[in-house]
Amino acid sequence: MSQVLIAPSILSADFASLGSQVREAEAGGADWIHVDVMDGHFVPQISFGEPIVRALRPVTTLPLDVHLMIEPVDPHLETFAAAGADSITIHVEATPDLAHTLRTIRDLGVRPGLTLRPGTPAWALWPYLDLADIVLVMTVEPGRGGQAFMPEMLPRIQQVAERLDALDGERWLQVDGGLNATTTGAAVVAGAQVIVAGSAIFGDAGGVAAAIDGLRGAAAG
Ligand code: DX5
Ligand code: ZN
Image 1 (cartoon, rainbow, N blue to C red):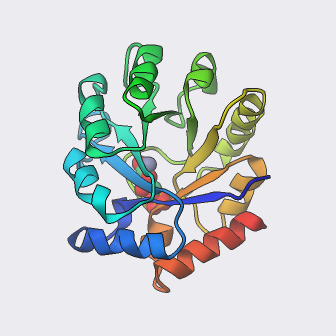
Image 2: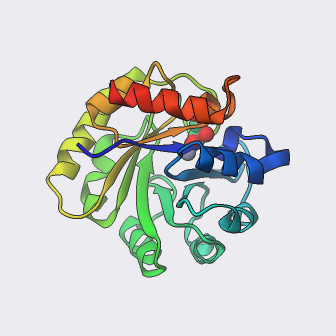
């Protein structure tokens, strides 16, 4: 199996030093930078929007992996693409015509990703899997960092992995929420290929690089 990728979520970074936090993550071996956009409507919290993607674009060569927790989605896709997003992941709950939205993202030259809340049945993903390069299994309720990993999502990770295995093309199964050195191993055994981690990386007293190493070790089992 190819190496598991680590995607630090800047939601838990020090916003007053965002550029240097992202540089630190890159120097520490991060693979992607995960950017959580929240609108105070699709989820209760407001995080930040496209200006942060634009500001970070010149700071790192790593892919900027944008997770949109916003509704509606369609009016904002072009803006995030122009700001420098490499992938845009949308929620099945947040847009009426998923196929159209996923195709629009690809037409903008950005990798489309698809995700769902823990309470949404996994079958909501099935008709759209071939339109997405990334399938994200949320392992917490979206909206906040620092929540506990939901082990009941492990069978879902496995189900998605089996379905993605049957498809062609370069695809990633990503997990997001409560991933740390304790929970990452089980997620990877279930089939996760990209580990998003916020508090476990930017909240680690040992520093960002050591935390990324720790997650890599946990992923390797
Ligand atoms: C939650 C976000 C996550 C969040 C994860 O809505 O999608 O990306 O930053 O944070 P941790 O790793 O702290 O659970
Ligand atoms: Zn996220």
